[in-house]
Length: 320
Image (tube, rainbow, N blue to C red):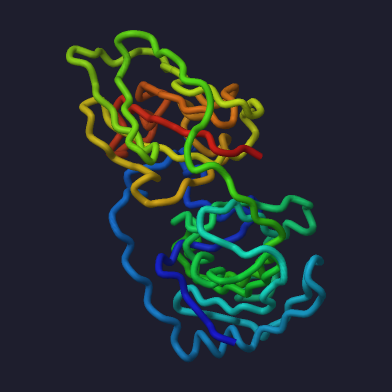
């Protein structure tokens, strides 16, 4: 079986939260958002697995039928130097394609001693992501050309809070895949006068013009631009969204549109302006947010956007 590594070696480390996204809460206790660190600059291609990495993953034994949590055994300690993956079962369901919302079950083991680090099968909490999302880059290449039902074995070196490095061994099984809209769809809403002006290109990608003399608001500004006809979003959900963010001088610092795929974020793991501004909106909507620093990165000492008022245009494509 061919072993692969992703072109963008995003971390695949499943801990108690069982999440792959690179936008989880930080140590400050303030949520993260799509940030300048996740900008649209091209990712550096990851190195290929070594012969030792390939051999390590080949030595892992995965038993059990698709659809149930597998039994995974390997000799410890197991280590790899770069993200390395192996397709165990190819699946016989629908074809997977970038841009689809893909649902998976997964179980993680610590390569050091083989201990289980979390299981969505056990917790009955399947996870979803957008295939092609850079935050899940370690899964993009091995899932190329696969089908629903595919089962992967992925090993990835991760760094702990104490600076030590260990290998996480994960079995990932794709249980569903659905197409989602590529842009907000619904009824146009006339925005209040004086707000930043949003213009969309033919694909739906937004640009923004900040009015001359526009003063930074003291409170969060939430302006729907398109009203979708989907369900209302709640604060405990994970949304899939296309978005672009600017500072108040009109300088863009982040955009999922530039990366080519929407991203998924828990509204419990983003800045307060996103949580408060998007909860209560409907799926399919496009929302303009103007976020003061105290609801953005104001509490994160040393953050490059700490003192900035941020402007976002967010297309809510899905929520779960």
